[in-house]
Length: 324
Image 1 (cartoon, rainbow, N blue to C red):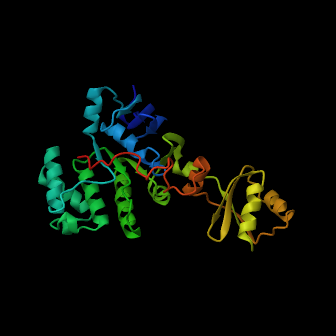
Image 2: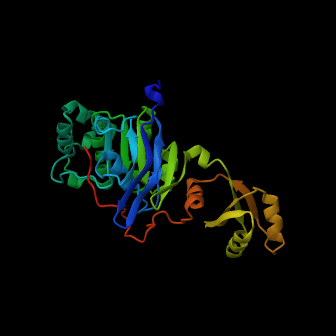
Image 3: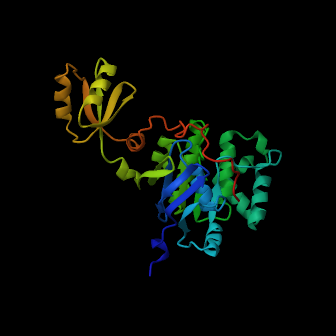
């Protein structure tokens, strides 16, 4: 018999959602283990929020099945969702109520006492601003309050949809530290995002979704473990064109003052010899650590993760509010 620690927190089997002629989620299979900070990464319109809606029971699947905490019957899923805290991309709060009063409403729905409110306000750094009206909060404070609402009741699984979206660097740092702190406390976190650098700095594991399909799933350490070639020359445009023609180059991209490329064989000497033969002399040629951006580009061919993948306006589903 498996122990509780051996049972995946989230497991999907060919999970799908179709809207008439549009397939938002296309037979995805995910596995999220206890204690992971799991990044669900994809361009706008890829199906991230639809997947979360399916897991939370807000959206009914068109096909496939899933388990939460090992259970998949209607009764088991209902019980499992009581162990989940979730917030979607656009949290709904009352603008003329204070942060504390907004959390009090959520706590009442969950049957919690006021001690829980004070605990989470301190955790998200809003203890001193608890009496301020929500409408006066900065975007970062609003996102932290949404995290606080998610954490009421000390859930075992925390699901976050784009928690750092629209924030300035300081706001991103604050959200990142809160999420890391939750992970260090042993919480399992399922985090959807299109912010590659934030996922790389925050998450332990990642799945990349494009056009509703999972195209890569692994630990962040594993997907970024292989290096890429970094090159510089006097003429970057000519260098980029030449490297793109190199037979062993999987993909090539301009990044700042250099060109980076994924090589099949990892043979820098052979690449350099090939470039010299074409009259291109490089001033810099080294292996560099591969970023999650490199992995994403390799898996999807999408250079700008912020662009919709389906020609839409960028949202892959209808707007949904904060889930108590």
